[in-house]
Length: 72
Image 1 (cartoon, rainbow, N blue to C red):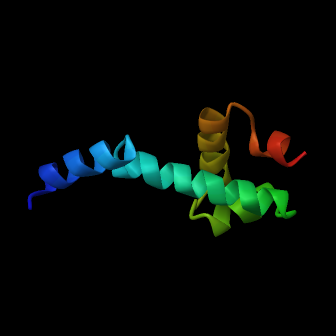
Image 2 (cartoon, one colour):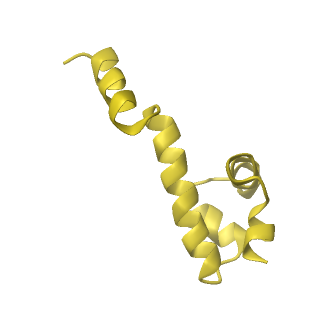
């Protein structure tokens, strides 16, 4: 099966692309980390972001508020 066909099947099954699904999964895990008391930097690193600023930007775009606001 070719890469384009995999992409179409993934989109049909999960409603988005693999990178979109992966970002959603990472944000969900970060929400768990934050609710358990992790700092924003700890959550960013534990969920695979190399830079906390990139994590904050992505989290804010997806969730509509900053991770600090979510944690707060």
